[in-house]
Every structure is written in structure tokens, then in C-alpha cells.
Image (tube, rainbow, N blue to C red; front, side, top):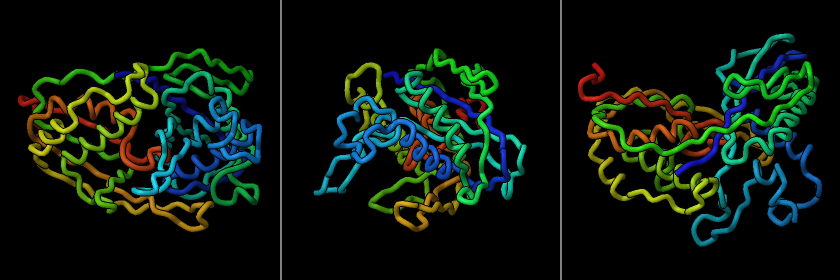
Length: 321
């Protein structure tokens, strides 16, 4: 089981004062989507789902994942997961001054070098238009100075040169780890999980494993290099055995986070669980699943950068004190 991933980091500098929210993932996603459509959409009045160019259009493939109707169960649902994950760095709150530098990253899944020019140009357009609070009044403008991938320069604004020959990384589901008796998980951005249409405020280990399996399965079906459909995993067995893993300690907490939706004309929630939890049990077979999930995020709204996790496995001889 293998997918291609590539992380691009955009190094920017404010050309005006700017103000981003405490968590700017939603702001970056909205501005990028608008810019990408402006620079790639050829048939402006068409809907992506019915457009004859949707199989080759960067906006359709990267951003507007097609939907189908499942009216008997859920209504409109995504036919495939978004192949993008915005990864903003922690920002200084309040007003950013003209001339200050800042950066953010974007993880691209499946589609890599073929769409790099569209992605870079879209971020440049974001800077010219402005983002965040006050963009309509001339604030939030920036210049894109360079783009890097694994410390290799992909784009340099000083020369105007774009190198889209950088090789994407193969993310492979590894084999079972040996002798893991404890595992600490850090939720770096809010993790949103639903059960029976309710957001969960606790994280039993089997729920974490279930959401990791769901994410892996969706990405492999949509973007896997093997093209074999559903991954060959023991879903029921893994979830059943995960129920035997105990929560040793937990400092998980609920973080309230909201964004303004232009489409809905109201604030909507991005709230979820953050903090750390320590699990204990026979954990070796679950480590590869969580290492995979660590790279691609899990849960709802991964496009915004939510569901960023980091794991620390400990063997039986080096348990967490």
C-alpha cells in the first residue's frame, strides 16, 4: 500500500500589515481555493461535477472533489478525500507588520509535480489580493519569496524559476513494529471525530485506530499506486484488538475554534480535541497505521490542517515513567 506525498513550504513576507486568526488553516484554504479557481478554471459558469474538463482541471482534481448523492443515508458526500492538507505554523497573534516574514506548508497527496505551477501561481495571487482580516481594505498582502520541498528550492521569486522536477515521497504502510507496550499521542491541531452524529470529547484507543483505518482506506482507494481498491487490512480484527488497549493517562481537552463561512454567511465550528494521551497494551501492530496517519492527518476537515497527530511509541523496557 503506497501513495505519493509532497510537502511544499511557502516562505512569504508581508508587503502590508496583516492579521490572521489564531488558527489560519481556514483562511489559507479559502484564499487558495479562490485563487486556484481564478487561475485554472476555463469554463467559469460550469459546475465542476458536470464540466467536461473536470478530469484534467487542477481546481477540480485538487480542490473541488466531486460529490454524489446518498439521499437515503447522508445526502451529498465526497466521492474521494481532498488531496491537500494545509499545515500552517503557529502564528504570533495580533497584527503582523509590513516587512515581517511568515510561512506555511501544504501537503499534496497523489497529484504532485504536475500541478506545482498552478499551486505556486495561486499562492502568488493570494499575496497580491490579500488574506485575513482587512483584505478588502488593502491589508494582508504579501509576496511569495520562495517555495521549498525537503530543503530543496522549488521556486525562487528573485529569478522567477520554477523547478517542478523534485521527486515526491512514497508513503508506505510499514510492517508491524515489535515490542511496543506504550504509546503517547499528541494532538497538535483539533481532532474532530463523530459517533452517532455527535462530536467525541474522549479518545478511546479503538476510536483512534478506527479513524486511522478510515483515512488510510480512503486515500489508498483514491490515490494508491497499487490501484487495487480497498486495502487488504483486517479491519474488524484490528478494531477488536484495539479495544483491549487502555488509556494510561490523558490531558486531552476540548479546544473551541470557529471560522466564518462565506458560503453559509455565518460562523461554523472547527472545534475538537487537543492535548496528549498515553495508551498501554500490545501496540506493535497499530504503530504503522498511526505513523501513516501522522503524515496525512486524520478525522474531519483535514483540508484545513485539523487532525495533526504525533506519536511516541515505547517498548516494554523503556516505558513512559
